[in-house]
Amino acid sequence: MDTRQKLFRFVILIPHRDALKSFEEYRQNLFSMGVSGAYSFPTAAPLAEVSRPFTPDELKGLARNIRELTGERDGKILSGRTATASVSGLSFFGPLLDIPVREEVFPQTARDKLLSILPPVLCAAVVEPETNLSDAPLVSENAPVLSFRAASLANLAIRPLAGTAYSFEWKISPPVWLPNLHAKAPSRRGPKA
Image (cartoon, rainbow, N blue to C red):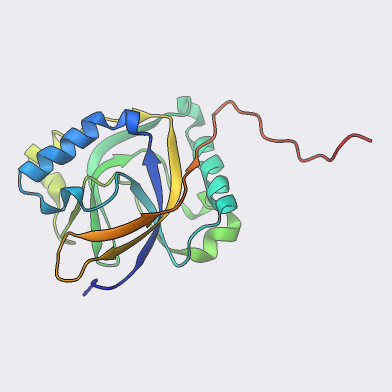
């Protein structure tokens, strides 16, 4: 599939930068081992390809739902084995995050925007669709084990640059942070009479 000039839209999860030192070192190692797409995508996990950006309220609803999924682990999101997630001719390789992303996690008002739901792979590299770096021991065994609570969600628009295989331009919307696990939900009742 020729992806040049196509605009892709995703909803992404962005871990707080304080949790990413070992991940950035991993990306550098991938690049030095010849994985050309190691810096081709923002430091984020694409959760879904979408037809239109989510509204701020839809991002907030998704953030609440993801935080609820992590409640049993005191709000932590953990990484596991490496994996590849593919959609529309793009493939993302990196550590798989342990949040079960299903249609029910997305706010009802946003579900008609979903084109494809992806396994939550924190993208260390964009790779060719048939490439499976998880089978390469030097690549998969050196993947960092991540654990973080602070993360945000955002809309991402990304377009491949003409004439290049791993160069993209992208724009990320203002982030919406996952709420504190122990924060009280705002009251929906009106003022007292």
